[in-house]
Each structure stands twice: as C-alpha cells, then as structure tokens.
Length: 444
Ligand SMILES: [Zn+2]
Image (cartoon, rainbow, N blue to C red):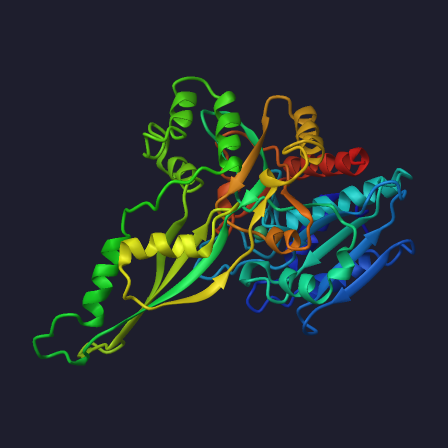
C-alpha cells in the first residue's frame, strides 16, 4: 500500500468512494481513512455522527505541547454529477496527462489528501507540530452541514476545546485578474439567508379572462423588482483590504478601476473587467439576493392560487444583520409579500478580531505561499459563498480558507467546482501538500 505521504494515490482512492450528497454515505470514506491510520498507535481517533451512515472522523495528531491545537477541516461529501457530461468518468479517478480527474478532486477530497499527506510527511520525518493537530473530516457540507459541522459543533464542542486557528477550504473564492496569479487566504465569508416568498391570488379555470393580482401576476412583479438591481453598498474592512491589496499587485488602469469602487460617489461595478470578475467584486460590497426556485401550477388549464419563490440571499460579514438585509429587500419588493426564513448561516470575519488584524497566523500562511511561489501573491479575501468555517467560528476559532494550489494563470481548475470535468494537476496537489507541511512545521 502507498504511503499516506503521497497525496495522489490517496486522492484517487477517495474519489472512487462515491459520497455524492444526497445521500452522502460518508461512512465509507471514514472507514477507509480509519483503516489507513490504523497502524498509528499515537493517534486519538473518534468516529461520530447523527446516524451510522453520516459519519464524521476526528483524528488528533500529537504535537510537542508548546502551542494550542490547530484544526484542519475538510468535507468528505461531494455534489451530484446528475445531468453533467464528463470526458472521463467522475468516480474512476483516472490519471490523464498529469491530472487526477473526478468529482471531489478539488472540492474537496484533494484538500483532505493534502492535509493527511502533510501530517504523514511530518511523522515520517520524525517531527511533530508545535501543538496537537485536530483533523476533522466532516460529512454533509454540500447539503447544509446538518449531519456534519453543524451537528459536531453543537453536540460535541468539547472535541475542539482550546483550538485557536483553523484551516479549511477557500470555497471557490479564488480570483485571477490581469494575468496575475493569487493565492487566496479567505479571512471573511458572507453568510446565507435563504428565504421563501409566497404569492397568493385568485385561482380558477384558465379558460376565462384572469382577474388582476393573480399569484402569477404578482410573480411577474416580484421577479421584475429583483432583476438587475443591486442592494445598497456597505463598507467592510475585509473587502476594503482585499481590494487595496489586489490593486497593489495590478498595473494601471486595472488598479485604478478597482480602487474606484471604494469611492462613495461611485457606486458602479468595477469597469473594464470581465463580467464575472466585476460581479464577484461587486458582490463583496453589498448584500445580494437571487431568485432561484419558482413553484407554481402544474396544470395548463388552472390558474394557480399560490406561487412560491425561493430567494438565495447573502449577507455581508461584520455587523450586518438579517434585519438590515430584509429592510433592503422590502424596499424593492414592498411590505406585503410574506417571507419565510428557510436557512441562515453564521458569519466568518477575521478582519474584526481584537488582535492585530492580519498579523500572526495570517502572516504565517502568506509567508509560506510567498516562499513556495514567489511569482504569485497571497491575497486576503472575502468569499461571497460560505463554507463550514462559519460553524467552527461559532466556537471562537479563527478560521481561514487556505488550500494553496499552484495552477497556471487562465487555467480552468478553480472554476470546475461542482461542474463536469473537475480535475486537479498532480503538481498542484504536491504544491499544496508542501505548503501544508510547511504550516505544520512553521506554526507556533
Ligand atoms: Zn467544498
């Protein structure tokens, strides 16, 4: 059997264990990892979950006892491949032209392989990290974390006692601009605020002239009110810091355009950028809302009396509240539409911590990437999406999204999350493992 120190065979094994969520069945992955770690009698291994098939694995690797424990967390479930057209089968983990293909190769079995391999490398070198390292391989991240991080942090917070810092996925926060490569270090995440709007009105036989204010008519108004609009701009330290650093690495006129969005008089998305990047940056300056699911009638000759619209709302970290977001939304859709709260996430925000804002641990991460890849720049980022970090942050742990991958500028890897043909170059996996090993050695 290959050593765990090599992330490539480890990742290929993990991809072949189908943990598509739903249903997840992450226990298969946990069983595999438990067996692979069985030869180590110095580890403290805990398997637990809300049901037998939704298992979470917590492994404590002993340190030298001179620093608080460090948390590395990754999720073992993956999103479905339904309706996707793959060039190579998604669960065979084929190695083609120096790339490992498969669902989860980046998001995030690749990350788990990097974490485990770095721990194995330290062990094989006869070294120990300054403090214990707690590796949490959790279930259910792709489907609300109900059986994973949410359950673990609520039911078993004692597993994470004393931990100050955590490293997890970057949640697709990466950005490329002006041909420059950046290594994202996610220091803040927006949080979800998912809502359901219910529209009602007179229903009946569709052969007659419909009265005004049917549910369908109201649907038209609602969608129009939410199309192409932007909620008010807010200033957040994490977004400001990201934009300033980003601009500092870019030539003019790109740099000026980025800095211009901080100007209060100018509330336009950054100009002259590819649309997806312009929109990504714009999303870090405001709360956002997107209608995503409409449920209406199912018979062509019946006017439905009720239509529901699910709204994917995202709230800025920091002081921004659900009330503020709802107020902004009401200003667009009016006071009368009943809104039901479906899900609200937790914020992650390192830019407001009491100690030096970006000192210490952040600098350790940035230094490692600078040394490993001098041509690219570490970048403190706010992610428009959320990860499990929000749950661990609730325990007072400072969470960073950091899974360094060295991939060429313009390459597709980061954009293939949740899509067909997800794959990772072997070199990028090795690069990330080296960075992670450096973290275990350097962090004190
Ligand atoms: Zn993920």
